[in-house]
Length: 620
Ligand SMILES: Cc1cc2nc3c(=O)[nH]c(=O)nc-3n(C[C@H](O)[C@H](O)[C@H](O)COP(=O)(O)OP(=O)(O)OC[C@H]3O[C@@H](n4cnc5c(N)ncnc54)[C@H](O)[C@@H]3O)c2cc1C
Image 1 (cartoon, rainbow, N blue to C red):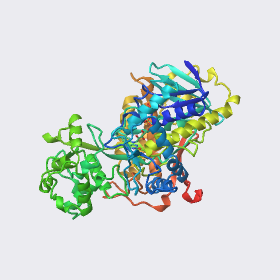
Image 2: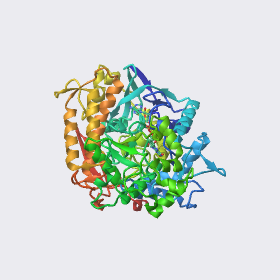
Image 3: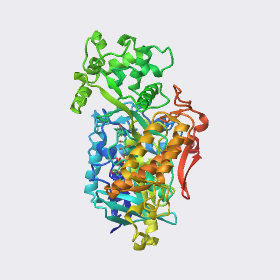
Image 4: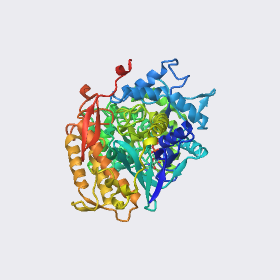
């Protein structure tokens, strides 16, 4: 066992964790900070790996409209109101008010934001009236990660790579330390009063997701086992994505209005619209889908996600075909506002009549770069190849319930970024996740130092005995006496290999917890997850890290399903159906303007409804 001692332990190597570690060190240069990350620093997690056509970082800057002292209010309001009023408004205010400082810090580190006349260029995203999205291009997140890694190295922050924190040690409701494992299955013991979780989302709980490998929601599991709670776990961004390339199929790919066909060559969309819907109406909805990735029940275009999901559930594979126009398509019969939107996007103009030729002709006109990108990634639309699509998970809006200092219910435990929850609601206006990592990363890092200094004089060292003699396989369970996840050697249920367990979890989640959710389906998923929990999980030839990741997935899946079961209405990406046979989900219900918190009570995972902090509570 390797032993470490520090004032603040930061878990993760993405945007939130790096920002927290940097803030802790900048706040107090004497503070000893250790950052533990699963891979090599700068290579793992969503921030280091994700791209889209134009990745957004939201900020209210001095020139952001509507200019003036109150501009932040519009930003906070967007997060809260578009989020469905199920998040803490005061956290939205913090995000909005501190977004300028967060942008300026990244700018000072050399993140190459696109500027016009020396000012950040900003564009509008998701339903917001004002342009707030700053960007460097498709790689905004990667540029942020690179800049933060450079800064962490300048500050000489101690980094432990290729290692995973598997459990938090809690004594008298306070963090006492943490246990990890490294790539050689060696145990790491950290003596620390403060831990910041920056562990990202849990996309791997779904069979189809656009996360990089390793997004197993470890922070959710760590926090739950330590006694903290999770919030808003039912709100997960899911949208139509390419199976082969993981590309989110939105924007111009939808505005070119491709054919949606199944593996029998059938154009199936119309089957999922009410009887008598004309094809042109369906085509207009496809066009509008371009502006609403991920699925959201507040957008009519969720009908497209529902149709694709249901078709796949019938055992079909679903493709976007750009070679031929969909049935009955006529460009001039798109709604006026859709045609105007199309014209705004024209990049490579062609004569009007050629727009009628095919979706590919239109895509060439509005986004020729996407055709090349797809070709470079193995899909040649020019040769008539099609894009196979599935609903795939991209972002967890909920997470470890934090308050304004990034603090949780466990003293000394902080969380930031995608692993934290309460700051976003059901929908997350694009650009606020990257922002969130920077704002709450900084806050959590600084508050962790403050807290550590206040308790260090009286902190008892963790004893060697606390961790000595543990079976490696049981590290996760043995420390806090909390079980609640698949058991190992002593379990009585059937034996299952961990890799098989992962497949089972992913299958259940993609079947019952994806686009179409029903109480019946969720109950089935819950029951089967409970059965899996009773199994004896065999590690097989997996490393300890891989094994613990899978055990975490089981707990993350349970927390997510339990949260989904509480919300018997539709809101954001949570489309709740009375029956899978229904064409559409049940509507939203104002009685559900509350959030659900998941926590361990003894060994039971339970859900509790709570009232979020409202704007009025803040004097607005
Ligand atoms: C395709 C795509 C496009 C997106 N586009 C946008 C956008 O335009 N705008 C926007 O705001 N957001 C966007 N997002 C979301 C945003 O990128 C993420 O929410 C954000 O980058 C998450 O950062 P993070 O620091 O919280 O987590 P990550 O960057 O995922 O980092 C998590 C880190 O924790 C480490 N880790 C995890 N568990 C452990 C453990 N137990 N022990 C040690 N280390 C651990 C991981 O290895 C990793 O280094 C997008 C996401 C995707 C997938």
